[in-house]
Length: 189
Image 1 (cartoon, one colour):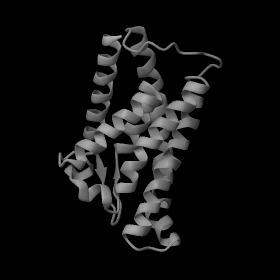
Image 2 (image 1 turned 120 degrees about the vertical axis):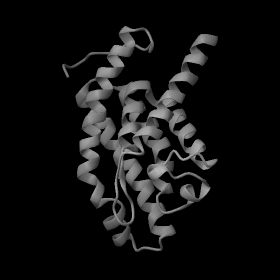
Image 3 (image 1 turned 60 degrees about the horizontal axis):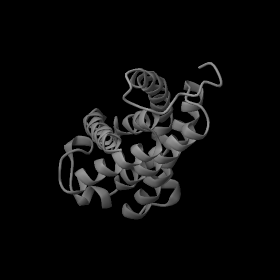
């Protein structure tokens, strides 16, 4: 029991660190940049599941909230969480949880992972759009235009990459006995 708790803490920490690293891969846009954070969220949930995925994203958010420069553009501090892009970061926790739950309740294959990661992307964009609307004092239309529409195509590409890479890595970690849950193969991926 002790080793499984330690394994959970280590996995969550590793994926929080991966998220911090991928956050620095960034394409700047005027209001909200495109970064590798959402790819990391999808990978995390696909590989380690709902509970550990959400815990990992909570750790990531807390590291940034205390001032460590883990957010996109090496940003950190509570002002990021309450700022225009903070809704996306908060949404990561819920996106990771729901993405993981969908996979845990269905099957771990690329097709189902794509569905789960697309739902996760929608959750992240919804949280981001709502906070952007209120913090930047935008209309709903302007918030959609600035905080959702520019990210849909890139989000789908990241959802596919997270699904494909996530399933491959998950299977390898299971073969190495680093993740205990079995992969249920109901359909060919």
